Image (cartoon, rainbow, N blue to C red; front, top):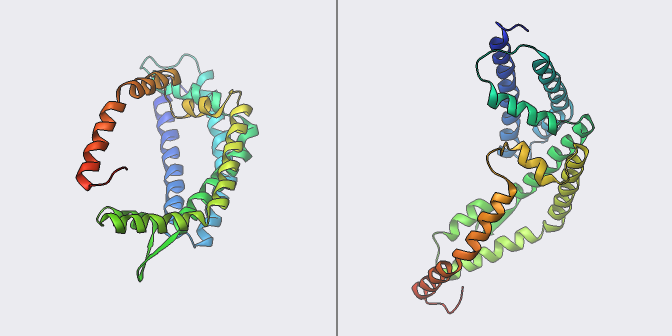
Amino acid sequence: LTKEGIQTWLSKWSETEKLISEARNCLQFQRYANTNDEEVATEQDKFAKTVEPIVASENAELRRKYFAFKPRPNQSFGELERGFEADDLLYSPGNLSHEAEITAAANKFSEIKAQIKVKLGSDVFDVGQAYMRMATSGREEREEVWRIIKKAETEVAEELDTLYLTLVNLRKTIANTAGFANYRDFRWLELRRFSYTPETCDAFTQALADQLPPFLESARAFRRNQINVPEL
């Protein structure tokens, strides 16, 4: 790693990251395209358990090497370095296995949701297609479709609830292991939200709560009149 070659070094690192990301996304797409394909599910889980931990460890070492290099080039790498610093704060070797567990649980959650089927008349739809029917149906049919969807979702609710609580606990664990008080702070940094804070969002939410209710009630009243129902 030299001052003259650092740009090429970073470019090669970026290209490698791109290839890894493409492999990750390809497996994700294949799994969602056919949730019954056990071979793809096995390959994706294997990727999460074997490849991702190596990538995370190697990236941590590359960041260490980058920051140890002096002097760094004059051109501005401010945003890049800010991201590297965030990644260093987020990284903990003790979280590598937990991250794989999170990926597996999240994929299972999505897989169950994708496999929910809804029978409308003689046709069978997935939930997304069923909801689209609601957009073009009359009020009574919309209600019927909605109830059928909710019944189908209720049948897998217990399994989804268990997975969701598993994800909540795992996310708390990785946040605490990395030195964060809670998962929100961990995720905030992971999403690179450098330009605003949670407190900024709280203030914005409160402003909406203070200002919007009269407009929302007016819109609801208009809609009630349009469809001739006493309440929504």
